[in-house]
Image (cartoon, rainbow over all chains, first blue to last red; front, side):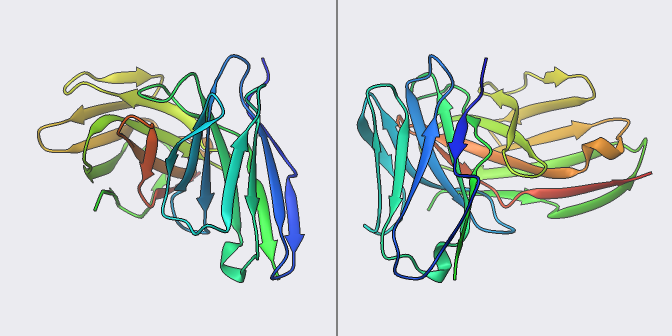
Length: 113
Length: 111
């Protein structure tokens, strides 16, 4: 079975631009979460989606948004990019929200110049 | 504010040594504690712990949770160079399944 997939692998953007990151969960998993990992730190929770609805949101500005599609894949959008948005963006999938294990994808490395 | 603290932040050992990584937490609405290994990019799931005192084992790795004292340990016996990685502890909080991560412990195993 394929694991969590993310695209693109790497991305370089300029300040002020917008970016869209994509994630496909493990087959059968209905919940997707997004995390931001800055170098040298643990991942920080951004969003969780389940059945196309937002179930949780971390302490991130409104420039960050996301959605989940009927096939449970998800997109993370970041507008008006800042240098501080440079990070590894990780997607995790789980069967449902709650006490189920979350499995991570390989991440998208975003560099903002 | 919810927080997860790992110690030590970094560790250098030689092959064959045994290491113990620590994770303490202060989180409202605790659901479970998870350990991950991160080598290059994707954190790889190791263990999920929900009950105190029940050890989980996988090969040379084992982990246990103490919900009274609010900590967990991850033990690695007979370390190998392939164990070199960042080990992340995360606590599952609330009904949304939000994971709160510690800073991670960087383990380097020398030949």
